[in-house]
Amino acid sequence: MSKALVEKYFGNARKIRRVSLDTNIIIDVLYFIYNQDRRNQSPGEREYLERCETSYNLLFTFLCTRVDLLGIKTIRKELSHKTFLLKVYRSLFPKEVKNTPDVRNLAKVYQTKAGLKAADAVILASVVLGNVDMFCSWNRKDIVRERTLEAIKRINDAKGLKFPLILTPDMFLERFGVTQKRTVLFTVSQIPKVFRPRFSYPI
Image 1: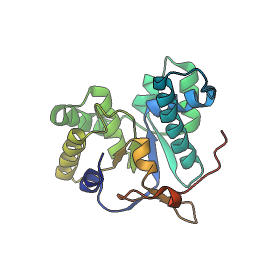
Image 2: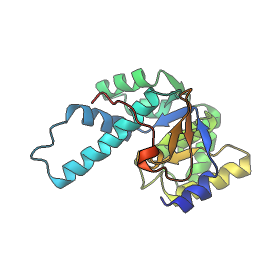
Image 3: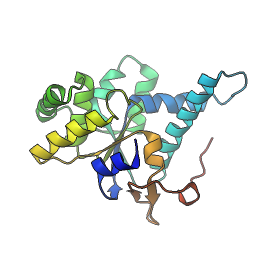
């Protein structure tokens, strides 16, 4: 997404206090942890591992700062048949946004007016009504795309609802800062690499 589009939908700098992550990010993190050997990998495998490293850096950044990680009940239910992933998800997200009647009603509006799939609509409705500041996902096909952002913003503005950040991990990592009190800030302008916060990642 270009700087112009980020400015269009997300405006000025803001504090990030509450964050939710899509399942594709959690899966990436686990893949990165258990697949460090890059020998004999195809270009596609190396590209995916680089994406996984970005997901890992995103999660570890939040674990090192004053950010509350909030789970989404719908996402947790999607993982119910994947025992290990579910255990990891619960450990990372001990608190979660409930699937309330208000969430389901807003999700129906998102389905109808934004053309979202049922599960994606419930996830974004949970993010909005759960007062989540940012939702990160690699799903550029359905969630992190201009058409979806435009529709959600229009609906939320009409209902007087907050419009959260909806970004891919790399988009966020290019545009965040951390205060001395470990508060996370998001800015619409890309920050040069030399000035970006750095953490000592375990891997």
